[in-house]
Length: 425
Ligand code: AMP
Ligand code: GLY
Image (cartoon, rainbow, N blue to C red; front, side):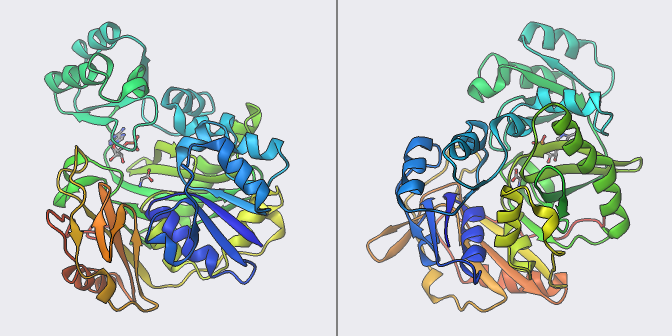
């Protein structure tokens, strides 16, 4: 069959790479893709949010399965549009994707169904939010733009001065545009973060292995938050018991709650969690595969991914057997351009990509690269990620960081501590 993947980052590169390896698949297309993705899929020059052109393309090429990477088109209703045209597409409807697209909706839902998450208040005006902040006794607090902000709309405020500034930045200066018209102010939770993704058809759940992201731009979790600087899997200390607890206290009740609200969720439900002393708490939900988490997860996935995507999209996920994983650890380190997550440089020549020896245990997934003649150049904030497998975490880290030593561009930055988190317990 022919599969169309929508998006053009490292997550989509990893998805195309894994989907292309499926014996069920004759051809993979990616819209818009990127020049790195072009080694495993045919790129089509249609933007990920141009729903009408994507639909026309999928009809014309008789695409049998479309897989949506980023949240933008999901929140804009691409799945509803494809399904109305009779096409099979993996991802949640517009109504279900609101769990990611609107943090006020998400927090309200979690509270109404008693799904564990931090206490919060939502605000629509900066004066009300500022008034609330002045009365706060305990810090830090967490201030979040309610809409989509590419992982950058969250501020952890250590005192009232920082909290005032965060409210103003979001609601008055409109740093995140419309996404910041409403905000959520919530309690700060202590613990270790964990990403748990599940493929679901709205009834059956297939839990993926846990992964950990590293959101801050610098080592030791210093500096502003980014879309993700690296991830690894499996996570020490996360065993079957904790995963079952997350499934039964977070994922099952959330999928049930969405069903009860008439928003059946099909696709990947991604729970961003804080594992606190009192148990798992939801930080956020995403309605899609995580980036970069998907990269180490797919390196470890032994099963063919395609049947899971097909059956989830078709509402028949209960029909397939369990999912299998390599026991190896996968570590993925993202290389970023100078300035990221703020304004960043583009057009720097990347050295070493064509000479790097790949093997079964080493992949480079591209997120923001372009071609200039025979050269590779930078074209995004996150430029590429190096993903390595190893018998244990230390071996995977060594392999990934050795490869990074061979790659360079002016201003290249990456964290040196991906994988060095405290065990979750
Ligand atoms: P979110 O986009 O809501 O997942 O938030 C981005 C990041 O901010 C998370 O990955 C956490 O590192 C941090 N964060 C968000 N909410 C909280 C919270 N209530 N307590 C502590 N850290 C938080
Ligand atoms: N890595 C965080 C995300 O995909 O939202």
